[in-house]
Image (cartoon, rainbow, N blue to C red; front, side, top):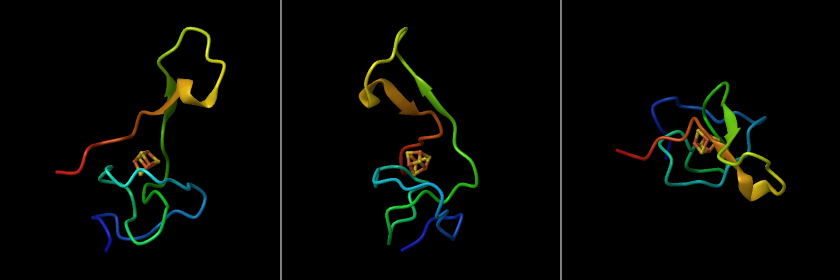
Length: 58
Ligand code: SF4
């Protein structure tokens, strides 16, 4: 199963299957580039960071 982008990006591993850009068959993102950010003023652990390219599946 693939999404509209069609191919996995081996440089971006991702397990968020609820995202429309998740490759599906393998745990990779299918975008060429993603944006990572934070919702914290002073991030200290990985849970403080977010993939801001996430879009829910339609
Ligand atoms: S856009 Fe972000 S959350 Fe979505 S599949 Fe790519 S890396 Fe994962």
